[in-house]
Length: 107
Length: 119
Image 1: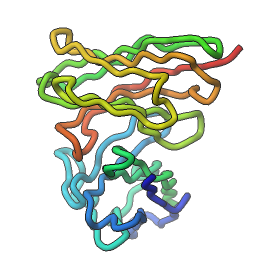
Image 2 (image 1 turned 135 degrees about the vertical axis):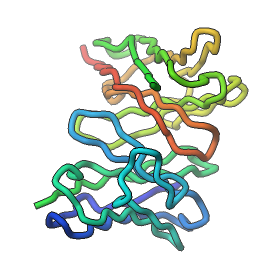
Image 3 (image 1 turned 45 degrees about the vertical axis):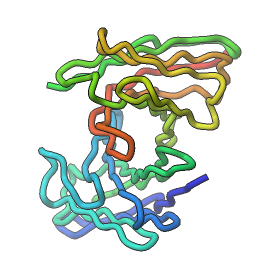
């Protein structure tokens, strides 16, 4: 079955750039999606089809996907960005697969 | 605005059954695929099942295959998850989510409903 691997945690200082990676076999051949989940809330789609932002998602959120790694980048990170972030892809053997999630801490 | 509202959760004994419902509004429900995703306490997201817009295609995670059944009623703008032979490891918050098709993002999510399997 297909697997996506994320670092359990990432820390960033306010105003700096946070990068969260997601690794999977030939992930660059698939679309990567990213979700933000605030404590006690439902996940929200923040990046779709590798690089696109849904309406209402701030421009400081961006994505890339190449080779075996997709990356979510948050520029000018704010305290409100502290949350869990999940990557997701579709695979013919597993259909929807999520990464294990990354807890972003802004300190 | 788009709303997805889950219902039907609760406490059930191991081996028991439960039927979750998800009522949709604010978008053209019959044009969208729907998925169920769950999150065990303190854990990550796990996809459970999806159903295509016209119910032609369904699929399930290996962990629930043969025990769970997804269905939908486009006339009622609702999707369902029938859960049988429940196990302790099925304890989780269950979310329904919409997506425009296979290989698309899960663009709207419900608030989630807690299912607890315990004796």
